[in-house]
Length: 334
Image (cartoon, rainbow, N blue to C red):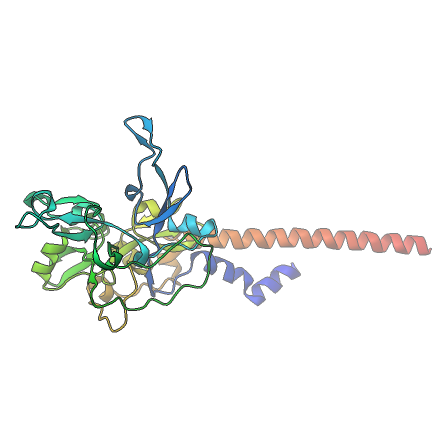
C-alpha cells in the first residue's frame, strides 16, 4: 500500500497512461515504410504496400517480390523509418504512351497513386524508368529531383532537412473539397471520408484549377493510428495501422486533436491554412471525450495499473523474505 501511495505521489501511475495514449494537439509529420526484397533483403522507401513488387505473379513465386514494412514495424526492428523526402513514387503520363505533342519526350508529373491521374482524359500511371534525368533526379514524394539517401541504417539522429535546389519541382497532391471555404489538401480519396460527409476528391490538376493554388506534401494532410503500444502515430494509409485504429485526417483532428502532414515544410515555405487547421482543438484531458474514445489512453491506464500491481507483489515478496530471514536470525540468537 505504501508503494502505491508513493507511485501516485511521484506521478508514475499518471505518466504511464500518458506515454502510451496522450496527446498535445501539435502538428506531426508522417514516416514512410519500406519494401524489402524477399531474396536479397534489400530495402527501399515506399509510401504503401501497393508500391512493393508482389510476392506472387499468376500463382507463381516472384523472385523479385518484396515484403512491406510499415514505419512502425521499421521502428520496432531498430531501423530508422523513411521519410517523404527519401521516398520514390510513380507518375502520371500525359498523352499517348506518355509522349508529348512532338512524340519524342516523356511528359509526366510525379504522383503517388492512380487517383492522382486524370484517367478519364487518357492519362496513365506508372514508374518513370525509360528516360534518364539530369542530376539523377527521380519522382519523389516531396519533389521531382534528387531524393534524400536512405540505406536502411539503424536508428540515429535525424538529419536536418535542407531546402531543395531551385531546379527541383514540388510533387503535387489532391484535395478533399466541399465548397470554396471548406476543403483541405489530402493524400488520397479515402482521406475524404470521416465524421463529415459531402467531400469530393479532386486530383492535383483539378485542385490547382478550382482552389487556385497547389497542394505540396507539406500542405497535405494524412491520417493517423490511435491506440496500441504507440498511443498515436501518423499514417499515410490504413495499412500503417497494425492493431490500432486508423482515423482519416478530418476525424483524427475532430476526435483526437491530432494533425498530421505528409512532410515537413522547407525553409521559408508558407503553409496554406485550411479547414482542418481551423478546427477547434479537442482537449484530450477531458475524460468524457477521450478516455471512452481513445484505445491508447485506456491501454496506457491498464498498463500502468498492471505495472503497479506487479511492483506491489514483488515488493511484498521481498518483504516476506526479509521478515522470514529476520525471524530465522532471531531464532538462532536465542
